[in-house]
Image (cartoon, rainbow, N blue to C red; front, side, top):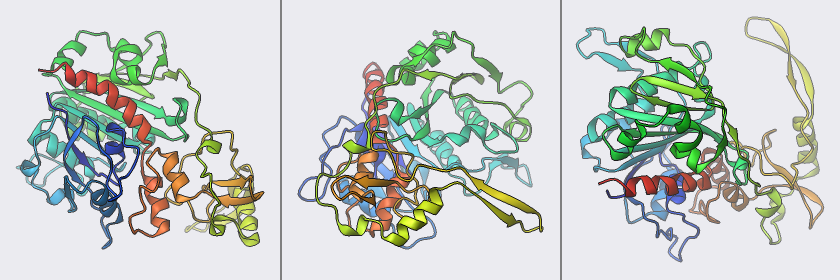
Length: 415
């Protein structure tokens, strides 16, 4: 089976960088892509903005492939090339469903939600394998009905003949340079050779030792004490599931034929990359160093505080935040980067530059290194604040690389 890929919500190409182990850019500004995964088509479109910086970056690095820059909801799913693996990092949104007014069209997903675009591609193209990434709060979404949104996704996969496993992975637990927790979801068609083989394995063993994630990121066994849920009992269809479901999903799990097993797993930790090792070994431009005013502002933002506030209903309360260290410890991996990185924000990384003995922000290259992109990956004409934004939105490419190596072995065994 060919290792062909379609990439959705592609951003600046983290899945592609990770799967193909891209480490540099050539003289023409294109990715030196020599990996075994062949990307047939990608889609990246940012709504409500004329300038498409992420797509422009992706298109510059992968100019030879078929890259789409239109709203995915407007794409005829039949026009997407047939592929072995569908990948994408999609936003965590409200996935609630309802019946159409006439009931003639059956169940409808909430309009504009990107999960339903993924679902439509699964229906149309039926890829053998799927790999998705999201924020880990997906497991608890929405706040008033914990677990419903993820249950809807699992039910959709199951209804279409897929089994799947998931795992919340902190990149720094497995040698990465950033403490970035994300949920990764791997689905496979039950009719594949892999699907048939996994159907004969104990579900608890899939979670702790035999599954894709357990082999990519080993965990300590939890003696097989997995919670069991059934997406069929009490839920005739997606509407009933959407209205009634509420349950706890743990950091790892497996679902097949509507039966879910989930448990909390403990990583077998590996030595992480500290901030000190991702810093540029050059003279840093003075614009990245903090002014006295910025030093004072960050001291306030990172300090502990309790501020009286009044909500829109006139109710008074105290807004509280605990104190952070004045600057980030260079002996530790970076904290989770947010899209506000580079701004005067509590979450922005601040380090003590040892050469100048002054506080400064990370450079765009250092932020790229936190996500394991090649240096200057986002230097494509976009404003510098957007370079920070892109890295706050990106994933840690090394995580995808490790998953890809195990997934490659799986596909090699398919006829």
